Length: 158
Image (tube, rainbow, N blue to C red; front, top):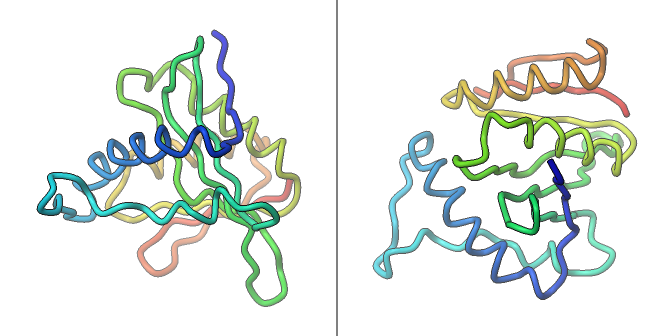
């Protein structure tokens, strides 16, 4: 299976915006989101992901030249600690449970070495199970997990 996270450039802008609509649709069950008057969800703020030198990175996921999802990564700073975080992670339903998410997560962790924090909202048990399993396997159990502000948070260093 040929899976490739491709860092976005300007030609991916429309693709990422379109995939984001499917992501927001999936997420609407957890956050009670509705479409606007035009029948679309409110646009996700993606502009910074297309700027040079910003502490963010976006990837579209391709499988055999077809778009199957995306990953948004942020570099944040909290109390002097700079760490990477998965801002958003999405695989189209058709391609889930094929190992794509696990493979892409490992690829992204390898590309961005340093401290990581990955969080999931309380109302999304599928995401909590996925990330705990993927991070446990990736780190060989060398991660910490806590619950804070209705989020489950895993931290580790790559």
